[in-house]
Picture 1 (cartoon, one colour):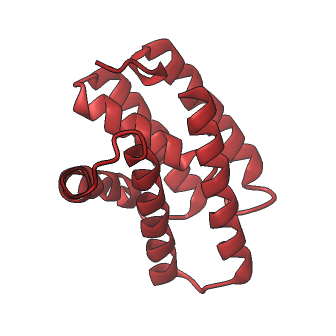
Picture 2 (spheres, one colour):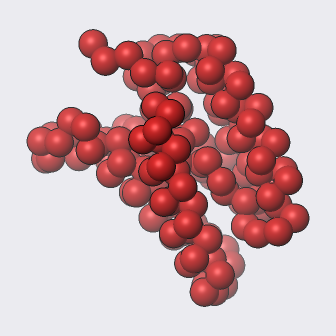
Length: 146
């Protein structure tokens, strides 16, 4: 059994507080979805291992980021559940990468966020750069911390 930092409820609490703080501050300067991919992986781990108190904290954090970013209420949470139920089992069945599956999940999550943003708003070059930069930052943070 692989143990990571998302198994520790104190780490999840501190990470959620950090994510809320950073996204609130960064909403002044650019499109604030910073650390949303890592929060998706925390959601994934908490749901898979039945850590319901940590899951509720992660869901609250994602909901606050939704409000701050201007997404519809529960849209990202429904996207998380959709990816967990339908996409993740397919990827796990088709691909034989156990260590790269988390990075593939984060990439699919950001592509879905991009699709949701396109449905509601205009496509701009700044949005493309922001999504790409946030994806790279989430890869680095997920690889280093988790």
